[in-house]
Amino acid sequence: MDMQDKERYERIRETLGEWCGMVELARVEEADAVRWLAEAASARAVTIDPEAARELADALGADMMLIASEFEKLSLYAQGKQLLLPQANAALPNISLGDVETMVLAAKQRSLYELTDAISRRDRPQALLLLHGLLNASDGGEDSAIGHLYMLARTFRQMLVILEKNVRDSRAIWSVLWQGFRMPPFAADDLIRQARRYKSRADLTRALRQIARADLEIRSSPPDKRLVLERLVLNLASDPKPSRFEPSSQFAIEL
Image (tube, rainbow, N blue to C red; front, side, top):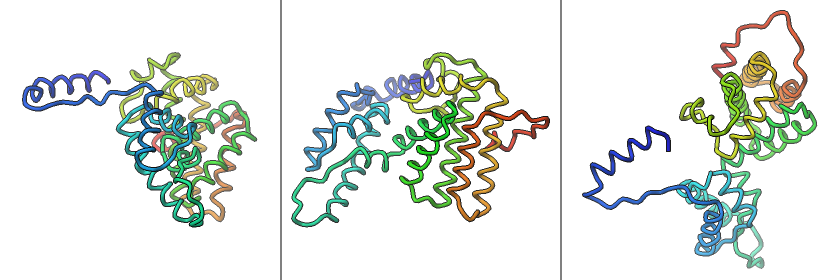
């Protein structure tokens, strides 16, 4: 908890503690979360692959309230898929790693951080491969494309702050990134490493301008939205070309 949350917690304890029972929903160890998922799956008459349970616990930072909520959705999703199988198949509904990656936002974010990692390494083939994975996991429509651009812009803005504040340790991230603008805990070290691959603020603001232009193009109903995103990723993963004139980055930063 940050300081503000601790103060709120203490006030609640002081004002309501003697009048009602209180249960503190603290984060648990990942192994305990994985064990809980296996037990919950058994109680719901579904199965969950071990790698799917680990991905769900890791992607949600072992936050049991979030894990329970996402597990409920995944259980219903698995049961719905089972209804489409032949009646002869008597196996229990199963939650796979692919289901978690498709249905859970935090798992999608992990794929996005893998994409920005490939971009920051200038690995164009891998970046394109990861982009196609993101697109295949979504409906590919305009809203989906704009959502990917929004998350790219957000991640590059986070890297810009990390670079400007010279953050070298994940523990320092929480003091420079405000609440609501922080990444999931699993991504902190990765994002610091990615940000340090950029030589200057200009490189990151140039990337934000490219994302802003792609966003404008997507909203203008281009013939092929996938092509717009592919071109953007290739540009982002290329070595920056020096320019004599750099336009204002205000629009890109506000994306």
